[in-house]
Length: 75
Image 1 (cartoon, rainbow, N blue to C red):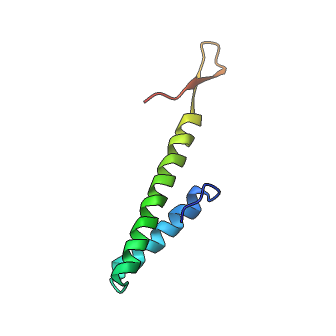
Image 2: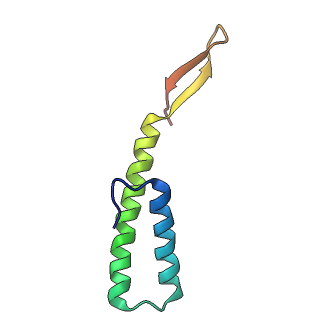
Image 3: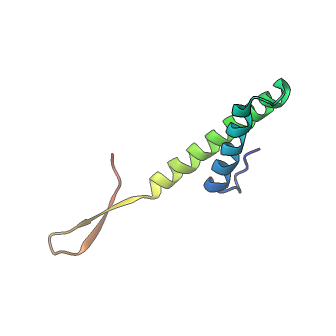
């Protein structure tokens, strides 16, 4: 299952493994349900990590004097 200590990359790697296993179609129904639940948890974890990363992103622009200026990132 997805854990908070896992990195975004590790979670994505595991999610890709799950997708490949389910696409093959040779996984029993019970195992497919377990993989689906694990995949759902991984998607939620990745989404949370991305949201947290977005909060940390700052827009850097050039000020009137030519020096870089950090501003909060707004869509």
